[in-house]
Amino acid sequence: MRGWREADLDPWAAMNADPEVRRYVGPLLTFEQAAAWALNCQDDLDRYGFGFWAVEIRTSGEFIGFTGLSTDPAEDLDDPDVGEGPLRRYVVYRKLRDPEH
Image (tube, rainbow, N blue to C red):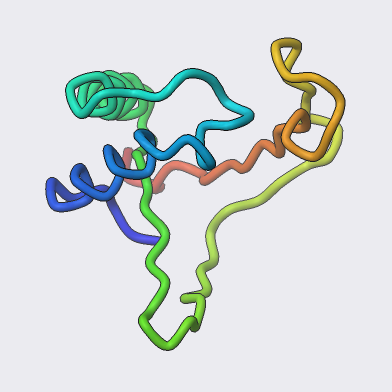
C-alpha cells in the first residue's frame, strides 16, 4: 500500500465507470463524480489523521505486501444497503497514528 497520488485518479475514475465493478456498489460514476468522491474522502481521512491508500499490483501479478494495519472482527459490519452476499460485509482495518502526531 502507498499513499494516494494524483496519477491514481484516472484509473480510479475508469474503475468507477465500469458496470462490472459498480455492479454491487451503486450507479456508475462520471469522471467528475469519482474525482469529487476521492477528494472528499481524502479531506475527511486527512482530518482524522489517516489517509486514502492505493494498493499496487505489479505487472507480474505479484501483490506487494504491507504491515501496519490491524483488524478486529468484532468491529466489522454489514452494509444495510447491500443485499445478502459476499460484498455486504465490511472489514474494518485500522492504522495507528504515528507517535509524533
